[in-house]
Image (cartoon, rainbow, N blue to C red; front, top):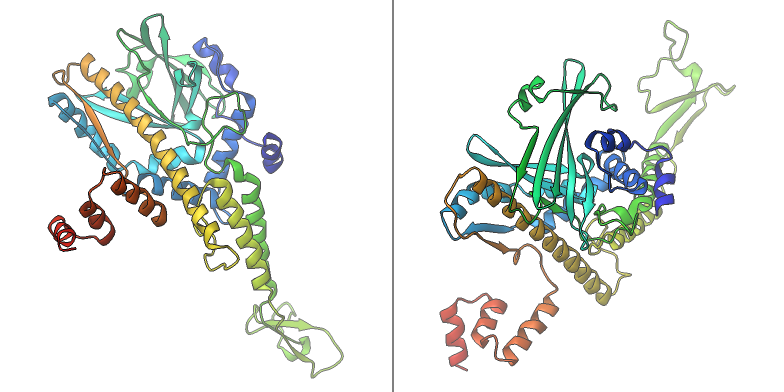
Length: 442
């Protein structure tokens, strides 16, 4: 896979700054391999590319949509919970776009901070943070976050490092200035930049068990560097297929362009412009040819091979769907009778499992975020301590296979776990009174 990524681009743009310069600046090793750095650059370039079919953005959008559609999550249980939920509800309401970035680039960090008595959250994309250590379970324990401000022809960069030092959680900030985008430059004072003048160079926090940020990574095995706990893009297994689709799409466009109707006539049949060239009434429709036959006139209307090329493109779409864990028909044409009913059912189950796993990954990241928000709330005494329970509702966000749902609920009825009237409410859409009456009247 790594060789395929290198061949796909030939030349890739790495992270904005060289890892070695950041490593020296923060005095810590960067736990990101060269293979992962290159892959992150490729995914970013693919996602931001505007030419062709723009499949990477479409794939990331669709995955994020399926994961978050009708998602509901609330913090409750106390005054502290109500305070945190004021920020959290806005995050949930607008969660799809950050999740799309995470799906596209292989990860997303949600990092809370306090400003003017409120808790706000930064969404940091995968190419803007570098993990420096992981625990035995593959969870990020420390990382450095990169923020850049462009002003007056220069580039101001802040490195915010989070790490555990013994039993203490430390946050440090360092600022730099450079005249070039890809160079970290020279150290400056935080006060030199208005946006950073209120930040402390170092903060030490005790009694912290987990990092003060949440990390969402797509529920896909890392095929680039299996030894790395970092996440990968949702289209990581379809990089070459996406390029194949773009090439096939170019063939389709060329087939239309080269097959455009044209009228070919003797050049002497047209008046001449001031440069002595034939003056054509429609340059797209008319073509000229210097021939001896003054009455030469032909219509060019070749047969266009749309069906063959489109079918080839659709087959590539199907393989992309399979490699990305989507159901058939997500991006391909669904009127393909070659697929059996069982294959279609299996593809829907595949999509269900993919989306469900990503929802679990998002839930884990949001719980980490709420923990960090709670810590900041305590440190700044923003609300009295109290219980903070987080509820999640993904039930309506994805549609399981109807046959599978029926069998599962029927088994619950047979086991006495679900009442027959509850089954009728689900299956027929009846209200409780109607369902109970229907059962009693049998």
